[in-house]
Image 1 (cartoon, rainbow, N blue to C red):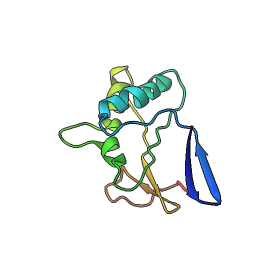
Image 2 (cartoon, one colour):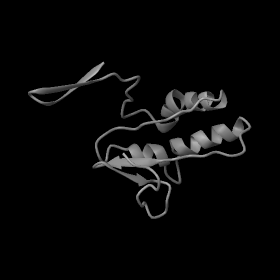
Image 3 (cartoon, rainbow, N blue to C red):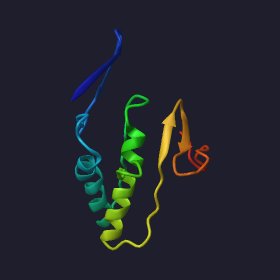
Image 4 (cartoon, helix red, strand yellow):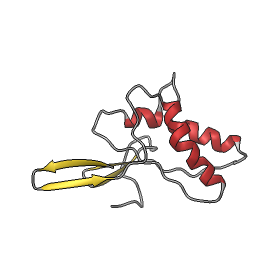
Length: 116
């Protein structure tokens, strides 16, 4: 359990399954997080992955990767297709200042049909 203190009069506690070190790569995050989610999906369950952190901490890089290194989204979809799935419905949103932004749209517009 990790405790984050925001103000002297307030204390927030969060229980975390795993915290990754800065030297761990996206493939290690995939093996630990998104691949088990793939197994859940193949067993007929829903799954969600959540990345939390300060702006600029690498959440988008981990999710989307680069042209030289795949991100969690492409690794996850590839794993689903390799297990025989032929279609996938995927949602990726950014939550910031109480608003949602669709990360899969080219414009980065507000996520349609989604609200906080």
